[in-house]
Length: 157
Image (cartoon, rainbow, N blue to C red):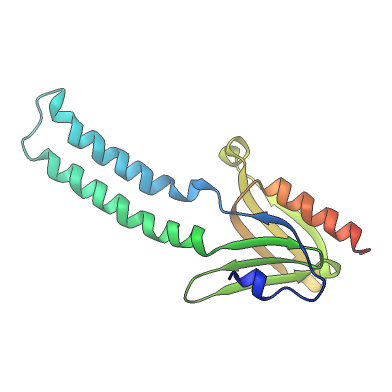
């Protein structure tokens, strides 16, 4: 059972779920692709005999680098409910952010140029009293923000 499902308040419903963007896998994917390139290179041209070792190392390092990204994607829950926004990160050590809609002053989205093109970014929740929480690498951050804003307006805040 998920963290959110276990911690819903009486009468609270899930309105929107979010996820991390596939961009978190970019570095491991590039390493694996480079390793495959090094492994395939001897078939096309004359290269040093032991170049395949570097290709195998790059693939292994890329595979190992993908493990934290996989765990992060698997253990992250991003939810807008009828009462609050919940962001849970972590598997063994856990970090949760839960902010009631009535305590949210504003929501902002930060996107770089690649973020705009690939539809990912950082959602920043500004709470009343100066609190601020960031949710980085969220997929479809504008949709998530819009769902949170719509939930705020329906709760009367």
